[in-house]
Image (cartoon, rainbow, N blue to C red; front, side, top):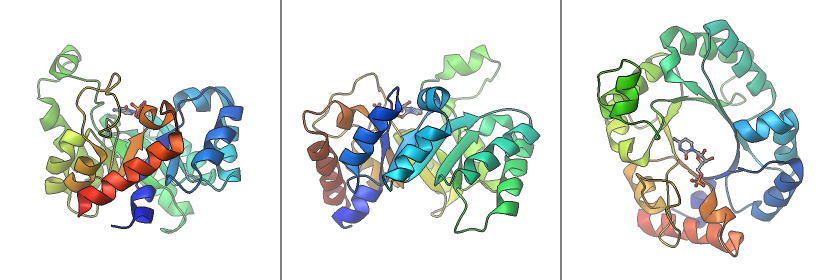
Length: 241
Ligand code: C5P
């Protein structure tokens, strides 16, 4: 794998409050990462202007709003995301097969395959445990649920999933080589774990089969963020040897 290919696998989590911060990060990391993730905090404060700010700097966007609602509402929201020109957007697989199928149909109807965003499903959040599931009436293990929801997402026509690095192997086995896997919870060897618990290094995650890595604080909090991003890309290249 080349350094350029490794950089493209990094999605930088723009966990910042305002538009000025976006300009700063998009400029700093331009060409050093493959995509920028706009999440709920940033989108709730700034709206589509957050996406446009990244795009103004030539950056690609993962709009991480994790929709979960009735099928018609999720389909309309995903279509609105697609119209913003983002490269990836997502929903919660727990919303069910009909919700996912309706969203896929709406986006595929208006956009061709090369123009449309990749549509991902969140399986079970990495913050959830067996206890979290039991409390809401689900008596299955997290792993069983992840595999079940990833299969359901694939059958519904979704392009991939967001999953913990520890679940990559299982998902690949069940969903095949072309199903996209995006994983947070990645920590390069030089960084602290922060509040992430079930972690892997970037090299391990990519070797296990991750297509993209969502990385925030190891870059944001580094004394030299560009150097940190470059170290991560170098670790990925090294791991792929
Ligand atoms: O700073 P850090 O690298 O931990 O950031 C990871 C990003 O991925 C954050 O934006 C976080 O909200 C997101 N994320 C996560 N775990 C999930 C889903 C999303 O850490 N299960």
